[in-house]
Figure 1 (spheres, rainbow, N blue to C red):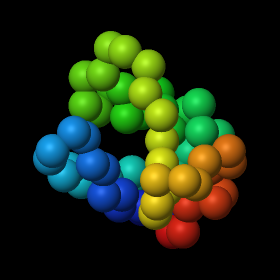
Figure 2: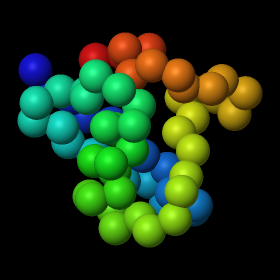
Figure 3: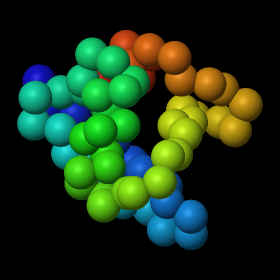
Figure 4: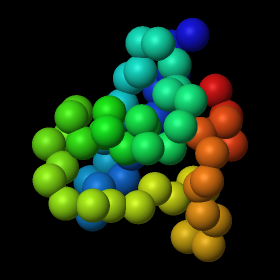
Length: 62
C-alpha cells in the first residue's frame, strides 16, 4: 500500500511517496530518505512532536 510522508528538512517541507509502503525498519526508512533527498550525513527521525523518538517504523500511521 502506498504511503505518503510529510518530511520537514530545516525550513522546508517535502513530500516523500513510498509506492511499496513504509519500510519495515527505521534503518530502511532512513536509507530511502537518504536516497530520495541526497542526505550524506546522519540524521534523526521525529514523529509528530519533538520529544517522541521513533524506534519502529510501524509506529508511523499509514
